[in-house]
Amino acid sequence: MSPTMLQQVDAHHRSLSEPKNGPFTYTDPVSEVPTLSGVDTSVDGSTPIIDMEGLLGPQRSEFVKQIGHACEKNGFFAVKNHGIPEMKINNMLDTARDFFHLPEEERLKFRSSDPNSIIRLVTGFQDKTRNIFVSRQSLKFHCHPVEDFKNQWPSTPPAFREKVGEYCASVRKVEVAILEAISESLGLKRDYIGKILKGHYVSINFYPACQESELDVTYGVRTHTDPTLITILMQDDVPGLQVINDDKWIDVNPIPNAVVVHVGDMLQALSNCRYKSLLHQAIVNCEKERVSIASYCYPSDDAEIGPAKKLIDDDHPAIYNDFTYKEFHESMWRVKCSTAKRLDLFKAESD
Ligand SMILES: O=C(O)CCC(=O)C(=O)O
Ligand SMILES: [Fe+2]
Image (cartoon, protein in one colour):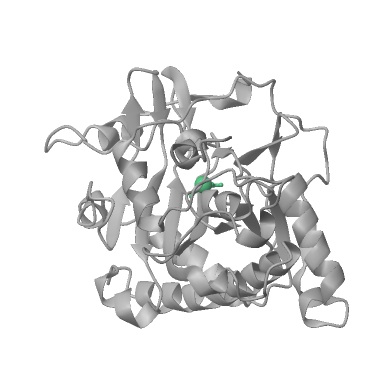
């Protein structure tokens, strides 16, 4: 395992993971840690960058091709000129920091182990069987349409609802535009994915800086894939995101004002595995805290998610059966398996 993943756990982290009012019940679905060689920092410029303005101009088809290529080869890409004003990005990041700097009792009001709640705070936790500490604290909440949910969001810090609402509405537009381009890149109608699109769920991720020495393996977030169509990740300026590309871990360092788009599990199924869900993780930084904002874009409960019929032929048999998002979502919480294996439950028999 890469030495960069061995981090130190400080006393503050431990107190959050074992709250006084009883054992902490939430554990995320089990992630297996792939035994790959260390992080390849030599591969500079390995993040494909898409200029979203290109999608609006006469060269749209060229940009659609670039997006398709990045989804197929890398499973992720960065997007610049996405149209989310810099001020809204900075307001979102500042508000996120302000929330996680609130007194613990204020934040813990939102704690819940129910994955279906509209809003929930997830604190760091220890996976004792694997001797792993997962340090991410996150506030996860529904946000589309903003007006339907914002009354359930925190009212402290006072700017939370306004600033977070503005960011969520802007990032939703980016999601829709990217999903249109992804549909086209698969040779499907522009609105193919948009038609099954429903919600939008944001996770404000906060990774405290670790400082003190008690040796353990600490992750920000363990290796996982996202159960989404796509995820749009906004990072602050502290590196931490790593992805697997060509069987190697690579750092995806922040690019100012750009967002990173990940292929999620639902897109893997819908594209009949042409685009594969991205395995990624976050490491913690021992000098600086880190904030990232993940926007998860997911289908409606009753949407049929099997491979698009147009992508199936004799040479490309369906890898998955049809299933609804509801079935997938329920199995995700029922069956504790590595996130990379979740879709296997829906594999077609012939495969
Ligand atoms: O913070 C990061 O860089 C990754 C976060 C992530 O993977 C997630 O929220 O699903
Ligand atoms: Fe993720």
